[in-house]
Length: 402
Ligand SMILES: Cc1ncc(C[n+]2csc(CCOP(=O)(O)OP(=O)(O)O)c2C)c(N)n1
Ligand code: SF4
Ligand SMILES: [Mg+2]
Image (cartoon, rainbow, N blue to C red; front, side, top):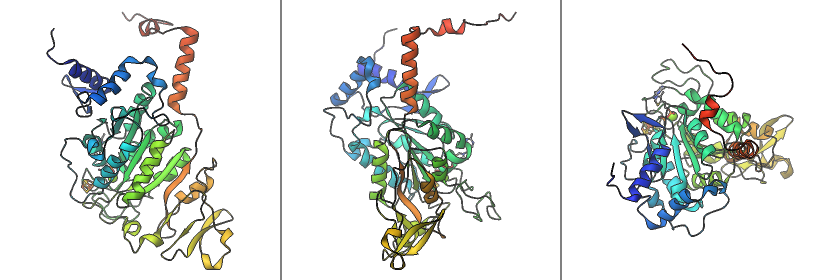
């Protein structure tokens, strides 16, 4: 059958199809391509390299920026979709920072993919002019695992909420992290189910009254950072929607990490959980309630920078800097492969302790799942030759069912 689509449109359709993992009534849905990806001449060359070089999978998107990339701006990453978050939602700020950071990560737009689950936060891929997929609840890490394993040349971001990643998707979240898949997970933590109109989530505070906890939550809240560290994550950080510069820095650092990076972002849901993290945001409260971590620096905080963190025995305590020798203060070591102290930091909670912001853990040189699986495939092919699925299906014990 003759197609009246241009070669570019055909190529675009082919790429769309390869990214689309779901079909409904014969129509591919929930996966989309960056607008004009195949129309702009500069981007055509990036795509032709995708199609022409069988060795493209050896390209490491985080360490070897492509030469002569088109210079993009934040606005180039904005899609043509109307943003449908409530006015005042913290999600806007995270979107703005992501658009600002991406032109500087050293990866062409055509090689960036956002995969989300379900929730207000998970609408994020629609608003990015990159490839993307709005997948199923809690399963974004699964889709990301498939994509990153088969297309290691792509930079894959997982966008998820506290409900999406820690309730229904808790299992998938943990396993992506423990495998050290080379992806970036951004967890929008508003401590509530926003999309479904205000039920409590695994990060909601004890005693919190919500639509599903009318007498107050009796659950102990989870810390996404503690879970990630327990799964031996290689990059763990926290930031906040309102602290835009800090948030941009964290997203950039995550993008450059080889291995799974988790950035937890405190995000205000001004409709169903307004001000839940005001203690960490408001100018007056913030200096006393959070501590900004810097690798190799002593842990000091407070309005007058007069408080510090000391390791005493096997616990952390707040001290007045005037009362202790300077070298009593704990020096932050984000690069320590042993996560024990980083885990203690992750467990610091307001109001008992200041909450840590910044990079808690950043350990390089750990093998990634995608590298290892592709090494195994290469070895298997070298030793056994190119496989054939049909032969495999009919090998070994087979039975005919009468
Ligand atoms: C299988 C399945 N179960 C339940 C739902 C209903 N549901 C949609 S979003 C959501 C929670 C989202 O919360 P969160 O991940 O915190 O995202 P937010 O909306 O707060 O950004 C739930 C329970 C669903 N869509 N699919
Ligand atoms: S319900 Fe909350 S999280 Fe969802 S868009 Fe509105 S303010 Fe944002
Ligand atoms: Mg939420």
